[in-house]
Length: 246
Image 1 (cartoon, helix red, strand yellow):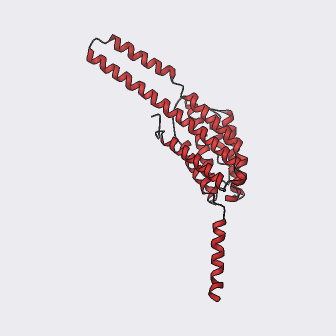
Image 2 (cartoon, rainbow, N blue to C red):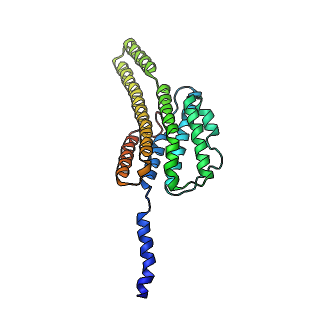
Image 3 (cartoon, rainbow, N blue to C red):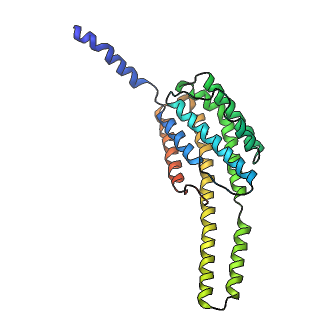
């Protein structure tokens, strides 16, 4: 009898642990999304570069904060972490800069209130409008900075003109090969950029899913959808070379 009484608290604790909400799917999605968005690129004017990089950094940092909260981690943002990033983001998008500023305010508030996993739902709901605005602004800025259709056409025309003026067949073939390689570089950058933009859009959709399922975010149906969104994002992100466009 005494042995049974001693074992009862341990069994009760084990049962309670099994019933505790599991935010691991949210953590995994947020970690994958942070990796996918944090892909540095340089295109367009220096001002556009700074704005794009600022929006990327803000989105990545916010997503890592979500992953941290999902594991009951402590956020370190006793002050607004996005003051400078918001100003830089406005170089590319006023709307994006405003979204970055709003997310910085939310991170500071969550840190000062010692938010943990149970507070995740309210934080996601509050942040979602700003995440959507930031995702749309970042996708638009990347698309605009990568408008290289004219440069691609000019390069092709230049090589075609050079090939037509070259009398030596061997030299002409080398020019044509270089033209094909250059065009392939343009095509690869365009494909990588398009896939990156698709990733950013998927991140917005994934965060909208978290908001829509906030009340039941640890239940089986929500977990399955979050896991599926993470898998799709991970597969798509793996198709974007790190450090593109080179």
